[in-house]
Image (tube, rainbow, N blue to C red; front, side):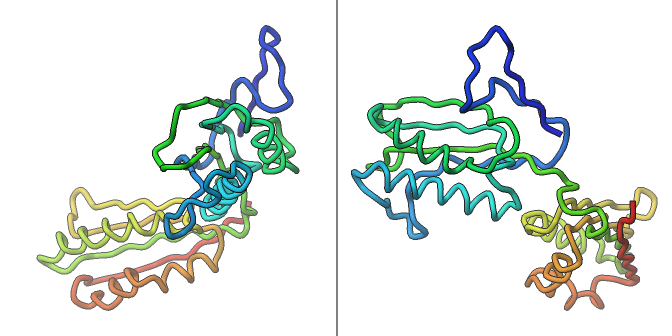
Length: 233
């Protein structure tokens, strides 16, 4: 799924690859993380090691929330203020990627005069790629749902489905979520969904926006059919 390249014309490095090619999978872009806690307070003011530890902890939390890990990172972009801090950065970066079985990610490291967060000494952003088949094939759940809107309610149902789709795609267990509307029968809606496992689908139906849709089903929907399928190849 991912190929790393280190041309013979370029200096080889054990710490990064010169290029990474993505052949498929789910791409995750992680914004630059500074040493901020959940309240937006800077951790370790004036202490690079404490800040770097917090930055990598934030990156770990963000990767985990997206169903990824350090092994899935294909690109790391680092911005630091003081060159004297590079040895500590290198130490903690190596620890972050410890256990990675693939080649190191592509990398960019830049010294800057300052960062947006006052007092921040380090900021790191990542790009990661997770295979849509990283979960075992037999654990994945596919849902095909058909909804026939009641007369004069198609516009309202479409609005609600679109709003729900945006939230659903953010759920960790949602691998794919597509909405379709009939060309000839404009009251017809079909949903194609792929979930990492049955537990993720169960949690999806417990979400407040899904409960709201269920509460309005008799108002908006004339006919509803849902087929839950499981991969077996």
